[in-house]
Image (tube, rainbow, N blue to C red):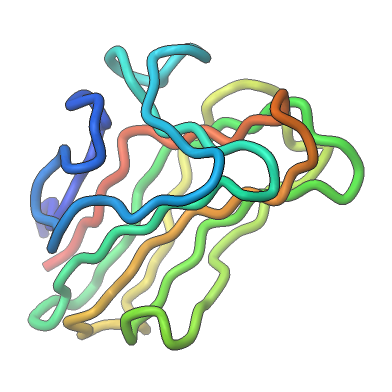
Length: 151
């Protein structure tokens, strides 16, 4: 077992990390930045408002026993505001939500999460996405130290 792909966002740009099929595809209020106290290093991914979105593809065509490891921080959510991590095994034709964060879990502290995605591999078009669904520019969804791990 080993790290297949990772990004700690320390490049400060959308093409950092290793093992990916390409750069992050992002839209809306999304950015890689130093503000907001990253988990490790100087930078992390921040999504805001209802528009913040980022996804990245990894080839898992010859992999099994795969998990996604990530540090996540949410802050200042109000009722009905959420943020999610999603995966697609078919290049985005259909999506599975691995976890949704809600108001009450937004303590502005990084927490570690690990998701077993072995049931969705092998896949040559595996996507990991982060999606914000908040109302305000001061509602935050942070992602740092992302790893796809397996064998």
